[in-house]
Image 1 (tube, rainbow, N blue to C red):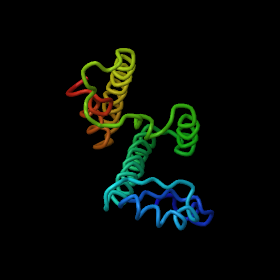
Image 2 (tube, helix red, strand yellow; image 1 turned 135 degrees about the vertical axis):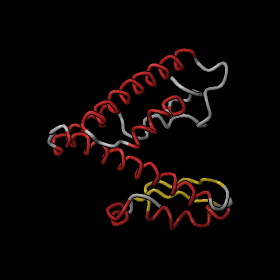
Image 3 (cartoon, rainbow, N blue to C red; image 1 turned 60 degrees about the vertical axis):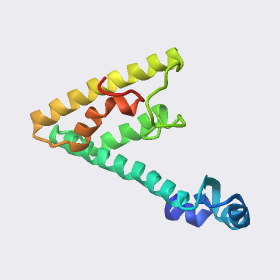
Image 4 (cartoon, rainbow, N blue to C red; image 1 turned 90 degrees about the horizontal axis):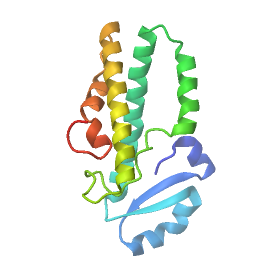
Length: 165
């Protein structure tokens, strides 16, 4: 289950459950009573794996936000205003799950839509350029940015491409 204390109190948890169809169907009335969404993740144990993967998104995002705060603070930026800018921007461009629209994390297969590939490659190039500039600013300000370093190295795979962009 995911959603935290507020969602738990209002019956709006997101349930990710593994098991057979029969097992999930048997539990569905209970799950429906405490949640706004029940997702059958398939085999036993898949619910827990999905919950952990979902939490990785959260914790990775929090680490990214922390690194951003360290960089912004070193540059003399008001962190409350940065937070406001990030929240408003996320409303328009999406957040950490923006690129989670594919059925695989593998590289794009041959024959993929050329328009989509062009759009994704463009996004990867912008991301690479931004991260390079972020790392340069961090070095200039003496701020260690290990997550940004890793993200820059994995720019291609993030967007579904092998190797460097």
